[in-house]
Amino acid sequence: MQHLAFSAIHYRAIRERLKAQDPDLDEETLADTVEGLTDLHEILAAIIRSALSDEGLVAGLKGRIGQMQERLGRLEDRACKRRQIAKDVMVESEIKKITAPDFTVSIRPGSAALVVVDEAVIPQAFWEPREPRLNRQALLGELKQGAIIAGVQLSNPEPVLSVRSK
Image (cartoon, rainbow, N blue to C red):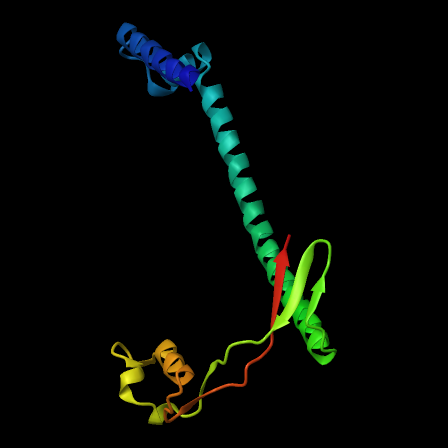
């Protein structure tokens, strides 16, 4: 970048000197003369080529990122399905724990989740004051403490697959 700054100063100095020596020199002749005496145009052309190359890489990466995001989604879905298969087989086979050299997998009881049966009959205290929205955490907490609240109930707990890497 120092070379660019020096070349720009050099270009301006030569241009001003030529203009001072020949005030009648037209702009095109002046530009051609200064271009031939400095390497500023070549430096700027190289910078523009580099920018164009970077822009090409940006376009390519945008396409590649889209493809990679699709692949990420497929891999996440596949991992989720595989975990579900392992959980289902372990539950059906009554296997509580498997210890492998690189991980331990176990089945433990899950927590009950909130099931909204009829929003219309849920007490107002569980609705948040902004645009009507159900405060699911408060409802779940109350139900877990044994409260009976119209319109909601706890689900049957689902087993949870837990994987710890060593």
